[in-house]
Length: 345
Ligand code: GZL
Image (cartoon, rainbow, N blue to C red; front, top):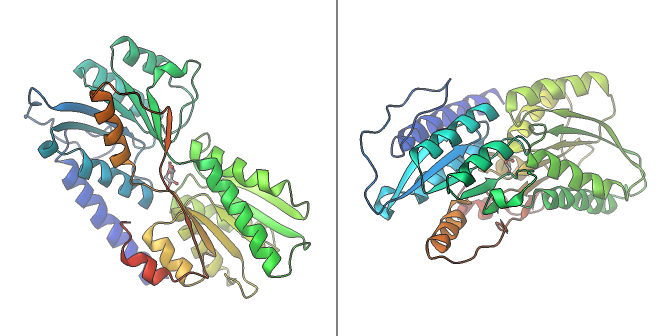
């Protein structure tokens, strides 16, 4: 596991520096805390479409893939001038970024909101400035839904339902339909759509199974380090955990590390049943090993659908208020090796 962690730390560091390099192709300054980037001297060409993207942060493998897709899609060669701002997991940084985009008079604002609430005022400022806002990835909860044009992302509640239905089928197949099942959940960032949706979607299915017992919910904030600490606490507190739900793969990596250090087993032969969300490459390798029993995909490559939406708006065409990307799931019974061959992330 240590080698695995070292390999992945190297890979993540490489990925992060690669993205920093890539981000250099975009324009803009990191919000406080990250490496400062020079404001680009270049100005948009007359007919460039100027897009301001406010990203949540760089908290997970999923987020890195999501950011890379923006860089790969909104290129200068294709007539885009991209101003990318990393929110560093802080809403105030994202609000600052949106005000910067408004001042610059961008053509579109693309916002990946870290949490659902607290956006009404700044979205009203964008509307008053005549700048269309596209909400991406997670959702916002605002009084007036005309404050944004549309949302492009995942049906996060359905992902939670899918996980619950998969667990019900699995337990049935193992003759454990009526057995008492003790569950703990490592939740994502509190108040984020991914946390709200996955938690409530799974809870909807749990209502149909009186023998399922949710011992506790704790936030791992979508990070591996926090999840490791939370899983250590769960293992010290409960001695009969049957199922661990991790609301993203990076938290599953941390939870698995803590479970292994406690000398406990994972997997179908009497081990802890680990369910996760995102289905990034490193997690699918753990599905292949049977350490994650099932992983519910959250497609990070939403940039192409956002570009399609912007092109429609440029042509004056109407767009759907909510557009979901296609998603599936992977489990221990599947031939993950073959599936990985042509997978983008
Ligand atoms: C889901 C996205 C979540 C991912 C996490 O749409 O917002 O944020 O599941 C990421 O990996 O941190």
